[in-house]
Length: 260
Image 1 (tube, rainbow, N blue to C red):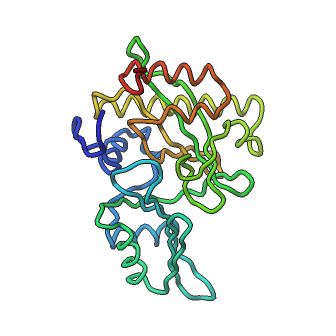
Image 2: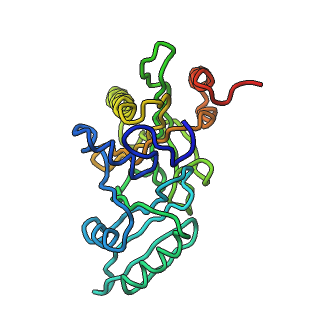
Image 3: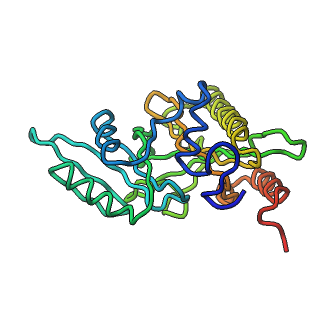
């Protein structure tokens, strides 16, 4: 599986293409936040409906270029703001807000996705990377799960953007423990496998999937996106060598990061 724009099957390998295929599955659709191209009309409509959205490059990984946008009411007045990296800007009118947002696109296409108020750990949001891979028998298998804690001054959780990889059990400890945590971990692993199975129907050459999931305050999992070339090395940070060996073995079996 190569670059972000490669068409494999019915839809291109872009966030919008992935969205169109993913929501064709009724069971998965309820776990996927509403997502559209980030036109002026769609961003405004989504902000009116959800008050907070994420605006992401249609092609790209690693959290680069992702913005958090909000519609606020303060002292009876409407305001708009967005955050990119450590920069935050605020506006009193929507046209001025969207003009600045569009300038940040730098000519690239973007999507707008419903914002989910994720669970936090020490006041920092976190999400979950579920690694799912075809095993040597050609069956989709859950091979690892790791939590990703956002940098204190950033909105994204990606390791290469300052996020901290941590065991999921540690991040979920304020919310779930013991048998309830075990059931939850199995539930999201199964969600990852179902997601990969469905995505392969639209992208037949898919062999690995990094399913990024956020959890809201009702403990409902939300699929943020599916990475077709997931980084296996983040699992070195998990502190479980057997998990990393299992993942890197299958990654190399499928042709990536082979030893020279």
